[in-house]
Length: 202
Image 1 (cartoon, rainbow, N blue to C red):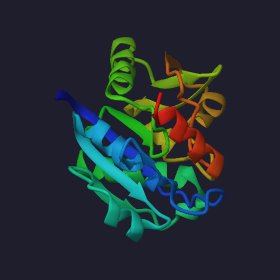
Image 2: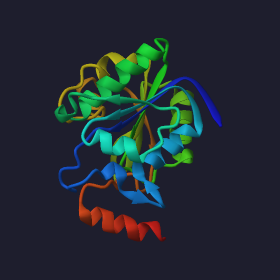
Image 3: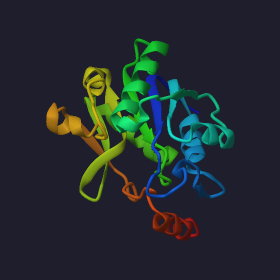
Image 4: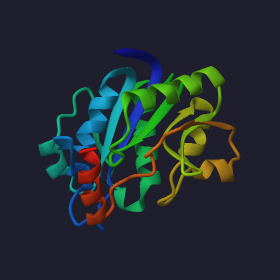
């Protein structure tokens, strides 16, 4: 167990998986739903607050996962896109602990996220005392990502289906990065599911 007080974690799992046709949160990877994998990885840390944001197919998803210490939050505005789930998760996290110093954001469809990856991200953030630390893959940056409290007001202003990466361009926040091979692999289509099955055996 790694103890990270004053750090909250939010898992975003509210999307409708429209291209896949069924909840990608429940696609199996190594014998468990991808969302369960992310919950289990995050649960190996001792975060100050733990929030799971659901939206589409929330009842079906809740039946098939074990949330552990995570509080499940239903985002009524999930159709707006990722920004609304970030806002919802952050606001609830601050209600639970108003003195949060950092917020870690995870997605439910990145099967190769590991304890080691998250640990490296947090250590880089704390060592650099930066506004944000993003994962870097294929020359781009994205989630998992962690944000300092100085960025929280900007996260609350996010709109539409654009994630927190937009802050780099709009607000020009200072950020650091941690390499994450396979970080660009997520599950959006049936072809992705088939590829995941092959990668699972490697």
